Length: 334
Image 1: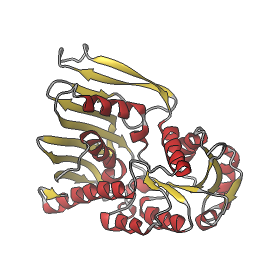
Image 2: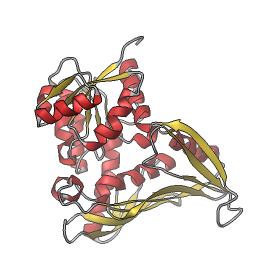
Image 3: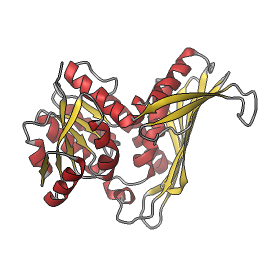
Image 4: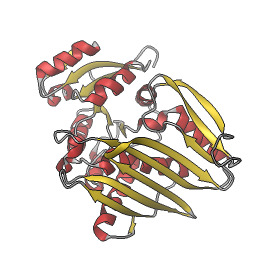
């Protein structure tokens, strides 16, 4: 592996790629970004020039066919995730695909057709941030006692009718866009899968999207995940793991600032306002760079990532059950 770097191609000039993921990949010692594609060749050229990327393509297919690209980052709108991930994998490319990996578990199951010799993973960058790894370490240590509750909130305001997140027919709405993060949090910290879910969902009369959802997921043995997500509530995010002896909180759990220090709190309940909680500072980190480096090293060394296609399908199964609970009006088995 000495001296070799994974050569990345980027599908689309999406904002998350330009501002978050591409800078993260470029900060990964085992990676380099060599190509970018857009359906607008001029736009691809403009972004390539802006970010110092050597090749720009006017179609996604051209980039996938580039023999000097080893891996693809796929941040296309949700309804295009599976088709282009499959196309890239069949062309021998490894794929890091944005969340959610599909619109349904049935669609996600198609990814099992990917060749066995390519790495495909869902881009949950939070799982690579040292703050998430530290809190899971605390949970595993028993310091919290029995971890029985994970509580989370994730919200923002977006009233742009042209934004893909407000188009239900292509996978817009709060649950698929940000509800997947608390679901991932529950699965990550409990290290288990939920058995059943129940959801209360409010739909936007203008867009038809799930603009607000509150969900309870039962992991069995007294373990519960409860979260609220919204695309039309004031911006806020939080996650905490509550045990029989203490609780742990990640101060900025999902959009941790790139290259800045973060913090986790461990609170034994000595004061109700939390001022006696222990505060652990996590060294400056770019979670997108951590994700890119882990992905690249997995490909270059042949050592599998902890999370692959099976994990993405399992996550999608929970999201499917949440929507089914809305239709059924009650608890749904996952």
